Image 1 (tube, rainbow, N blue to C red):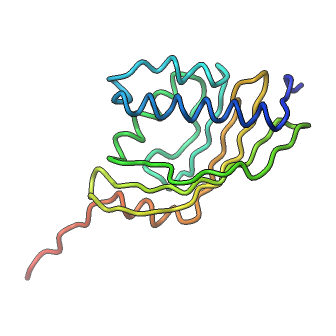
Image 2 (cartoon, rainbow, N blue to C red):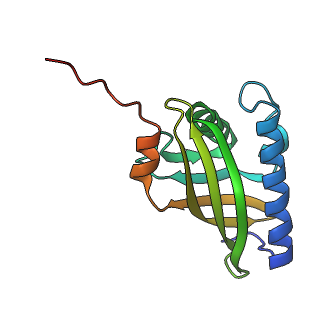
Length: 156
């Protein structure tokens, strides 16, 4: 059974607060340097985050402890990960689902390569907390390649 869902204006408020807490967390140094609790409070204790397997931080992350490990993996992958533009595309009050389109500018920590790419996320909100996040990337191969150092070719 679903918990209480929210209307679009409340959904927008919940997401704005979470994104602001995420930005504060990362500006304060992120994993290992900043307190995760002010960000975690925006998520259900049973939150599920699905990341594409082809990414360096791919997999399913469950609960606050996994979410904190996910942020550590993201911070280890990206020197810069900036939300350039975000749009709340749609909400469904019956399911508590929001669709968010985000344009990202990022720089790989391993290679220094920069790229820009869109992410479309479905975010499920229950009882005023984020319960599930499913980001969809247009080109996971390009993102993974930007994060992978080129191997030197041996001279013969």
